[in-house]
Length: 543
Image (cartoon, helix red, strand yellow):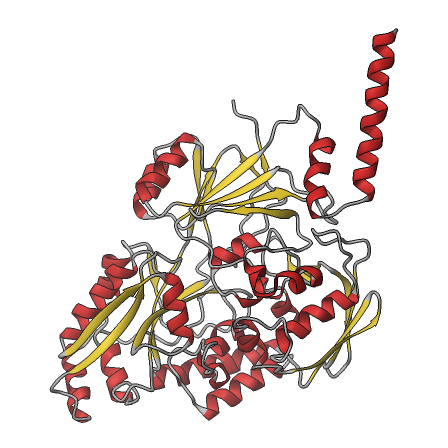
């Protein structure tokens, strides 16, 4: 009897403790609450993702790299999001929205009873706080380069005139002019909503201490590049099926294969040909293909005294043999690019064909502008593989060799990815291997980003060619404002023809990123962008 009373007393104390925890949640309490709500005998489910490159940061507003976004989409939510197919817009932190007939005034109804990971409440003021940070360069929390904002909204503050709260759960956004891909743009990971308290507390260091409303809570990021996230048991939407996500950085292909075979890594993205062949021989692993929703290209800086000459750029385009390039630098696992819009996307102009290799014509073009005696150019290249450049150094060697056929001497500069990004955004190169993984299923996401003169601003450059054509700018702007899709489609096809004629850059290839997934992983669904939240993914027990 005494023993029974003892256990009843312990049970009552434990229940009271859990109740106290659940009523006083802050960032540390989230973890403690998880311990009790899961039970002492709960078997932790951990999914480890093996990647070749570390994240640059975890503050999505100042990022552009895919490896960072693949982590942050699990920590944060946006006002709206893409469905699992990556194509259709769905509610997220905004439950619903309306827009005026002229497309300028948007009202978003903010979801109630949502908490940030630090225990603070989401409301309309929190949304406004984030927008003001992004769009106001004088804001004390506008720390870093807000590259996506510049690319999408045409500078600071750009096409957004004002953002204000009409009530505790209603936000009004007023645009200066209509913007057809507005909702799609708000779903991009860069526009995730962070805790205002965390922004004020950490400011620029938010990149190391992220606080959002998402299905997972940031736990740690070690010196080896391993990031650990833990399940948010108070998540407002479908709660995560696993307890932890571990994003493990493994640059060495052999080591990654070894860890995949042993089951220590359960998901691996951007597999090399060698890794793919090894996985095909393994019963426990399956391969999953993504879509051709990317582009790798050679951008030529038109501020360079040689590259500002159209015939020089045309000559360089005549020196690339895409078949040889794909065999050499892509191991025959890519599709030659004819233009800068992926062929899976509407607006793609199938009538444009890449320039055939013709060294003799290249030499003639150079001689016609008194450049036949030789040109020296530097090519900026990243050390690490990217989705669109699985072997960037091999590609650089090929380009160097190909251009030498016309007496163009290329000096290859190989630097870490983060340094290449910095120099790229500041225009510090002659030529650069540039690439893009599509964010949204809209040609604007590619063509405006690469070729609008609005995107030539030091520190936030995405128009790496420094290309400026007033007619192209006008058509890009018109396409952004038009709401008729067929009309927009015709504009984008025309824009591609104009860019092909001017040759500010050379499209090289589209790749099919391939994932390796352990068969224990259940419910992993890829989308077109290649960046998926993992709260719906589960893990079967080991046999």
